[in-house]
Length: 141
Image (tube, rainbow, N blue to C red; front, side, top):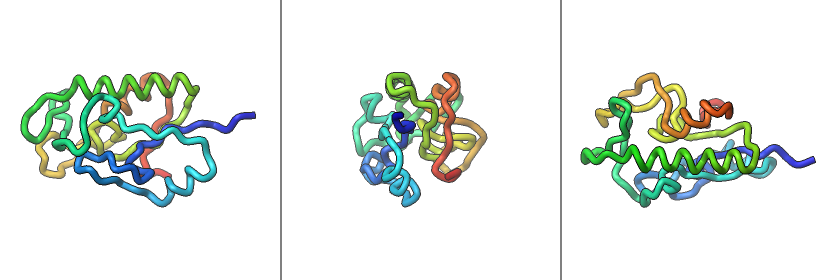
């Protein structure tokens, strides 16, 4: 029997793919990687964005960078690439980075770049949930 595969935000595993070129290494994720089959993903990079990159937040349904560039298309492409991987590997669960415009679950930044959180999901989280994939944030493990 094969082990269950889980999608994980690459930044949580210590990969330097955050907008600022750093990571969000999480010790619980590092331990999880030792016992589970994990596929690391960075939707922003899969969507064609470079690292480092200008921070972005969701505002009025679009992903807008701090310098007012619409990167919604790149975020959607990244989400679709993550979904392709999930389908290819029959993935049922993803652990994604909270508050991110890609990976956030339940709470995301409001688009004002003032660290204000609102109810909502990131682009990738929305798409995965729409396709029946359970999404949890690193804060929930």
